[in-house]
Image (cartoon, rainbow, N blue to C red; front, top):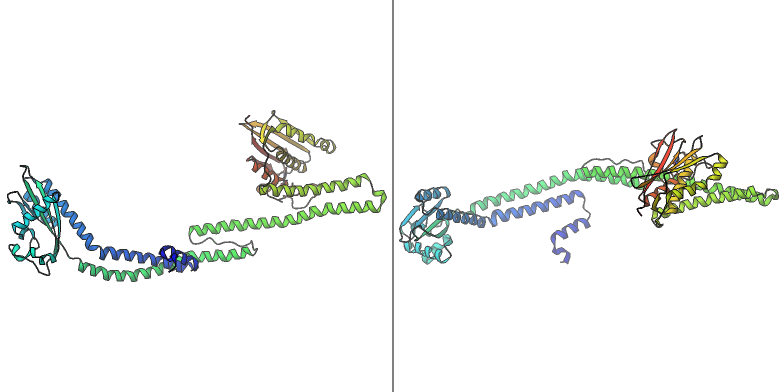
Length: 501
Ligand code: ADP
């Protein structure tokens, strides 16, 4: 035998998992195993241990009766109590004082041995109880009548000895002190009804129960497996379609609550996968477009300059430089994105003045404001020390300010405001442009997401800016968001805790 089969339960569960049985058979085998354990327990308790249980209960009840009698031994109504207990509990009682006089007695008939014993036997029980700490219990087996000690001559009156119908009994003796300091003995005797016929009945019942339980296990397994297995099989089939790239599938939520929840989760997953797949396709188109356009320009201008000496002008060289810069920016953005999101680019936190940093950035836009009539202004309520990665936060600011400039309206107005409140500094970048539709708002932070699907290269970026902003701000555990109204403009904001030192 293999060592693993030593623990039957473990072996059973391994067997089930290894052999990949269907839910139906798994359930059936489990129910069957449960029924078998139940039947074994029933059989043990109802047949094997029934006798011992019955005897233990009877013994406990006889000891309890002796306790009651011992407490009331000096009561004047003792005889009444004795006959009442004898009748109620079917117990034979004799109380004998030190002189051998009977203080009270109740004889419940033929099976009552203590009333048919010679005095010497009674004294024997007295002595046994006295030497045994005050009480003595004896299971009086019907076979004991065959003992020499219980020969016919020991008994007075009608002796039912050696009668095969004779019943097992329990004899209990208890010594007790009377009010006058003398000792009395309480003798109790109760019949043990034979359980053999009961056991026989139970055994037959158990055979029927086994049949019924096996049948019920099968029915239950079938019913439950239908409820559990069917939706799982459906979900499995739909998942296979999804794995092949069909993101238009819908998982049907039926059966148990957990399965319905699983179906809902999968529906959500397939929706998200579909969306990501869409974005991925769009990215490929956009990136290739973004890469191709500057490359075409660079090679076109370079060729013209090579073939026509007159075209070798600084303006044309500038076009080549601008286009290569655009390419570099795109590639850098892509690299930044993946580094930040993969967590390989650790943040370098240091304490610095955010207000000063914003001021410096805005100064770099001076040329743009002069040339393009941009109205860019900054308001702040003083130095704002924060603990952050300065270079990364600069990147956030550049992206947000560039977006505001790109999408600003006819008034060409952009405001950057810094306000300090409740130990935090709030940075707002406000424009009065077209704004963003509410249904687009949750998506603008996604990678490669662009509200305007028409590729307006000159104005619109590559759709990576806000997702870089999001990654950096997430790494800073900063709060951020956007308030936007279509036709009125947008306010992009983020807030950082002020440095304490
Ligand atoms: P892009 O490089 O295309 O600007 P972003 O990730 O920076 O990409 O922005 C995503 C989208 O969010 C943009 O395509 C644009 O439609 C929208 N958006 C961002 N900033 C603004 C703004 N200030 N006003 C209006 N729309 C904006």
